[in-house]
Length: 119
Image 1 (tube, rainbow, N blue to C red):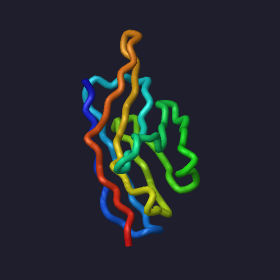
Image 2 (cartoon, one colour):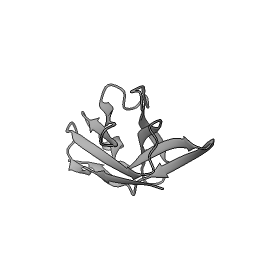
Image 3 (cartoon, rainbow, N blue to C red):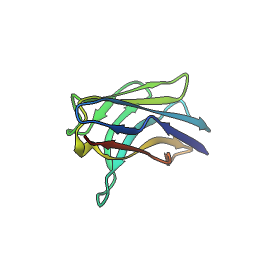
């Protein structure tokens, strides 16, 4: 099993910044992809950004140029630096880890952290 614990959410004014962190523990394989998803009220959960163990990244178009995902493999931790925040970024942000064990894909989720952008 894998456990993911997020931190760093909160309330910030439009144009501000936040940094989310997610620490993974448990049965983590060296080859995996970690990422962030978000879900606003009434909406489906959507991808924000992912980063593979080798460092390859992928971003939603809506956050490109504003958000930066990074990871520290030694600490099994993924970060999301969010700049130039907009009210539409308001959502619960979920950390995710994907890995394949014995040919079976496994997806793990954190409990979520609230991010609210409001003046």
